[in-house]
Length: 233
Image 1 (cartoon, rainbow, N blue to C red):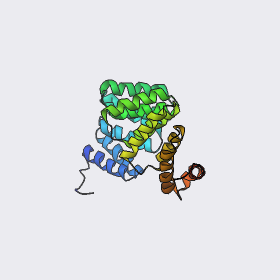
Image 2: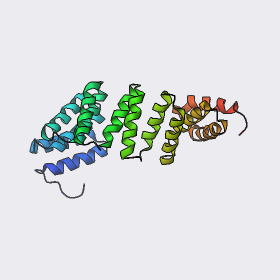
Image 3: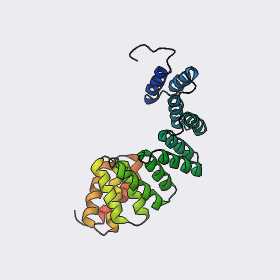
Image 4: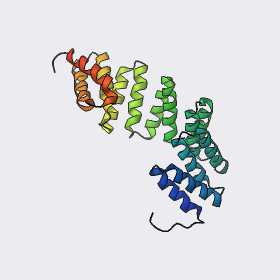
């Protein structure tokens, strides 16, 4: 992996662990981070990165322990609080997740990932007004994430704010035109607006992009029936 690794340098083992993590070699990543900690048991980033590997493996209790260990060393680090909040959320410990996320924002009110994680947590719990609030707060800091706009559109749909949903979806499409399902969502939103021209436009795009993709089979059949009964192109 390039230059020779110094066996007694924890930084080198952390760097190697990050490479293994990116490659999906989780066991080797864990070994590298644990080696770093055996050389320096106060290495906050070794704990944090080890926690991230455990998150990928869905070993959330272990991940929580690692993020807490990192925070004992660096109690003001917003990224560590954010990661801890995510691990709590994935463990269905929502109150603890909220506390961790709030600690992240207390440490750094501009830490955008926390706004989006909070929004996703509320969206998954069908608490749509709070989800919208946090998506919009995050967008004020960084408006370049297409997935955020797609999720914001879903939240708006659930609150019957159809025009706002359309605007969010279309902004998302402008950032990432390859997200297939959003064209289906847009078609249904325009159907609610009784705008057949725009509905058909997005139905056609969805049918073209979704054809032959198994996970869109149900939506594809629905879109095809809707297109056939919606009048001329």
